[in-house]
Length: 253
Image (cartoon, rainbow, N blue to C red; front, top):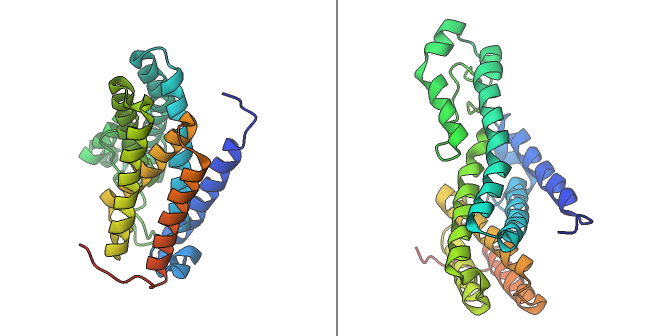
C-alpha cells in the first residue's frame, strides 16, 4: 500500500478528539464537553475519534486480508499487530505502574486477586480495568486503569469477522457485501432515531463502530462507488441530524 497518505494525520486527529473528551471525564466534568452539550448529550468528541479509528482500521485491515496469501498469514499479521504491544503494556501496568501508583503496601498489592486478574487483559478477550489501590481515592473521578483498552476486544472480534468474510468468499461478492452493510447501517440509524440513549449503551455503540470498520473495508476494496457512498452517508447523517435536533421524535423500541 502507498504510504504517501494522510492516515497518520487522521489517527493523530482522532487521538486528540479522544484525549479532549477524556480530559473532561477524568475530572468528573464530562457533561461540559463541547460536542456533548451541542448534541444535547448524544455525542462526544471521542465518539467522532472512535469512528475515525475504526474506519481507518477497517480500511487497512481489509487491505491486509485482500493481500494475504492465506488465512494463516492474515492471522499472523493481526496477532503481530496487537499482541506484542498489548502484552508489554499489561506487564508494565502490573509490575511497574501499579506498584508505583497504588496506595496499598507492596505486599497487599501483590497478594490482591485483582492484581493477577489484570494479566487476563493481555489476551485481549477479557479486559480488566482495576489495579488494587490505583486511582481509587476520592481525588479521582474515575477509578479505571487503562480504560481505553476496552476497544481491543471489539477490534479482535472484527478481525475474526473479516476472516469469516474472507474464507467464505463474501469479501469478494460486491452486491451481497453492500447489501449486508446497508442493512446494518440503516438498522443502526433507525435504532438511534428510536432510542434517546441508544449510542450510550456499550453493545449498541460497538455496533456503530463495527459499521465504521466494515464501511472502511468496503471503501478499500473499491467495490463501492463514490455516488453510493455519498448517498449512504448523507442519508444516514441527515436522519441522525434530524433526531439530534428534534425534527424526528418517534419511538420504535
